[in-house]
Image (tube, rainbow, N blue to C red; front, side):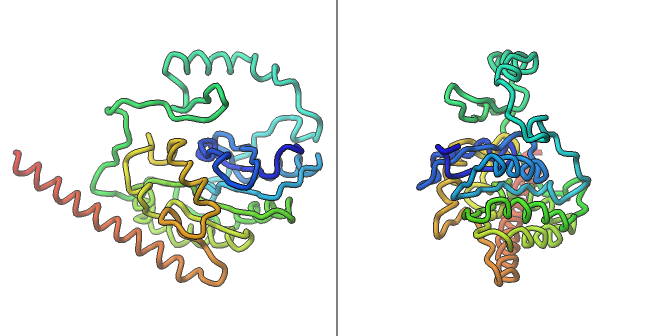
Length: 288
């Protein structure tokens, strides 16, 4: 632990974040697939008990954390008990690890992602037929879309585990088509209110899900949610940047202005998407 002065908590989206691109710190990326705040908090408490005191805390805040039902935390026994972790062989020599490895070598990884020889997460190369291609016109996303702002309390408690660290929370890139579809459910304002509660307790809060050169493009992602390591290198570099066209920064006392800016950029994207849909429809009609 003495080798690291930075910790990253997050979901599979953050596993693709190149920690070495966060300049000035030596970060350990503790993100894992389908991670959630209650699990980050348990790991943070464990690390604090072991004497870990980072200078920088980076937290990936996923939208699903505030939308729909809650899910019980899935934690290893040693995290629950506070004991030393078991031998790595107990995990890496398991049948699950063998199955995942064989599928990855057969170009059939279970999550369209894999770890290379340097333990860096990468996206599987997809054929054109399986690349991200959102449909037009944009339609409301399916349920659930009930929002629970009170769940922001977990992120507040997480930040309190390392009071001396600089704390940066961020919403990873999400396809502008996905955010636009969610906005049509009428739940966007409630969700942004939940985001605002998290932002109030962090030194910096950056939202990369806003329409941007990354999220308004169909490249660099297979599902509009998981972006390549090359794209995430831009995200990692932007975490400490003063300005960027990739994010909107939530600043204390400026919430109405920030939300208005978010909505304006989303409206501009949706207008462009509507024009594209109209043009596609007209082209199809002429062909027929």
